[in-house]
Image (cartoon, rainbow, N blue to C red):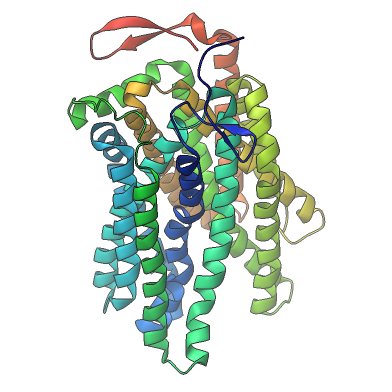
Length: 450
């Protein structure tokens, strides 16, 4: 029998690395429920702020929301890499906690902006917290699981993220209505609602800081290199072809999320109106399609996570990107997302989307060098932010210039390209130990082994 120490089991089937406790495991699950949802809820409540608090005409909401989203992604592009490298220097726990605090503070003060300029300043501040939170959480998810449980933990994180988003947006979206019904004016109702959400983020920061104590893996011996050196090594890690294709998968998969969140609703609503529906009924039908996509993704996540732990991780990426390509292209070729067959295509799209995301996340966690995990994950998040930016801008232009399904065809094409790249990597480098990875610190080659 093996004498090697084994880590504890989380939820009965996810094995963590030795030295981690149940508290550490439950903390990362809590952070998955609360972290990413705090980065989604701001977009959900933003229209209320523009209308009820700033009295901005609805015809200007689209352009203002677009500018704010672009600003957010520019800051994410600029800071996710440095935030990941900073996690290697000062610890994942500090970076993640700082992300919760900054994002929570940004949410609390957002409805106090008195102009568009004020929204821009606060959104920029909030985006700094988002970069820290995304980078810190990504590194924790790479650090914590034993290799054979990596896919299962990442899949569980995806499920909890989705559940948290549904819960927080449902409560946050109804808080202003409940407060107005209780006698508050629209402006104080919006400010109180955002204050409550921000306060929950601050409490979450305290829970995360205390819960991760003693479990900040990778920082027992802090990396003393400069942030620039760490970033250089993060980009240099792409010499490993599996890391390179994982970076590419982040570019495609993160853009996928934006396209679904933006254009399913827009296209579905417009298609319903064109068919003679009232606006609210068209939006309701589009929302059903969106909900089906998200539900199929949530239900498929555990199965995909188990599969990713049973097969070669590059093979899993080939399957994930292939499913995503099929789903996006089929969805984009429809005459209307509300037509016959839309439900079946939406289910395929949801499964493909989550398959691509989980496969890429699992692969980068497997391949990242423990000495520079933060820097590597930071560059991976950087690629995702660039993909989000391009998906937002180019998808919108193609929507107007070509056809409503164009953003989905664009992402389907990108997923297909990454799938072919992954096939090439799987064919040329069938075994992990066959690779020689360059140590950028000392300029020597070291074997890439399990």
